[in-house]
Every structure is written in C-alpha cells, then in structure tokens.
Image (cartoon, rainbow, N blue to C red):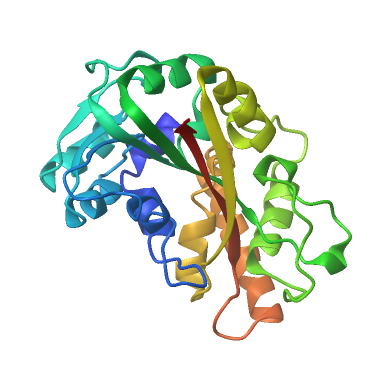
Length: 274
C-alpha cells in the first residue's frame, strides 16, 4: 500500500474524485458534508489533502495524518496542515477534534482496536467518527454471485446493467494473479458493520451505515486510471500491467460503446458517541 502511494502520490484523488452518487456527491463529499463552520476536523489517511480542501471550503479547521511522505508533500504544497504519523499512535492532544474522518483508509489500517482507541481519545464530546469504506463493484443480480459482505451485504439491485467495466477488470486481474497471494490489508472488522459494532459499542458509540453507489463511468483512460489504482495491481510487473491494460481495452472495445459503465459501492459508516 505505502509503495503505491510513494510511487504515485495523489492517485486516489485522480482515481475517485470525479465519481458522483445519485445526488451528485463524490465519495469525498459524503464525508465533507458532515463538517460545520468552525468544527475541528482530523482526516485519517489524508493522502494529498483532497478531503481537507473540502473541509476548509465548509468552514472547518482541518488537520491531516498520513504515513506517506510523498502524499503529504502534495498536501503541504496545497496549504494543508498535515503530520506524518501512524493512526494507531496519534501525536495529538486528547479531546482536540469534534469530527474525525477517513476516506477509504480506516478499513486498510492494521490494529483497528488501537486506531479506534486513538480516535476515541482525540474526539471531544459528543464526537463523531465517519469513514467511507468499501469500494467494490455493484454486482448485477444476473451473475448469481453473492453480495460483498465486507461492504455491508445488501442484496443486489435488480435494475442494474448486466455488464460493468469493474467486473471485466476484476475478472482479468484475477486471471493475471492466478496462483499468487493477494493483498490482505487491515482488520476485517473495519470494513463490516458487525465489526464496527464490535469495535465501537463498548466505547459508548452508536453505529450507522449508509450505502452509496458512485458512478465512475468514463472513457477508457479515465476508467483504467480508476480501476488500476487497486492495491493488487502492485503485485504485477510492468510488463504484466501493460498486458492487462491491453486486454482490458480489447474487452471494453468489444462490450461497450465509447463510455464504459463503472459503478462502485461505498458505505458511509458513522460512529457517534451516545
């Protein structure tokens, strides 16, 4: 994970910021809309600072934490206040934030219990932690595949298209990685509603999960940039990556028109102190 962000800082913004849900919100905006003027906000896994920019635009006072020096360099260039640190050992005062946010980072962090303890420590009462988790495809019901339990486990919608560029990509990536161990990041509880309840209820927090479908359809170049940001791509050699890109382009040319449909399911998960 860190290798990807050091080699391609800003990749998450480039891959995902253009996506929108049915209400016209990006996955970042799902978190930013929780910010009120004057609120003190901590962004865990802030990357290049895209969420911090939205926090500032809503009148919040944001601080970002990340372990990637390359990502933090971009955030500082944009004027963000950021600190290089691990989420499990935050160098911040107790009760110094009203809101803690995390965009597709909390679910890939190791030692979820230590991270939760740190979030609880730095939150002022009443306090809220909100994270975007998931990032899987919106699987069509016609495939007969089971829904992604890590992303919440709701049944698939019946009105989705029967083909999606995300599914094409995952199929080809699976073939390319046959026989290899896949990336296993973070604590599985951090990406599941029942896991959140286990992590947060004992500390007096109430947990809610909201499902959102993010439309990331686009040109071949746009879609490839989005999908190729998957951490499993770091397991491929440059030659294998080029081969996968060619196969993906061929399959998309055969299946789709100029615009390739891609829908990503994310969840806005919230833990609010009761």
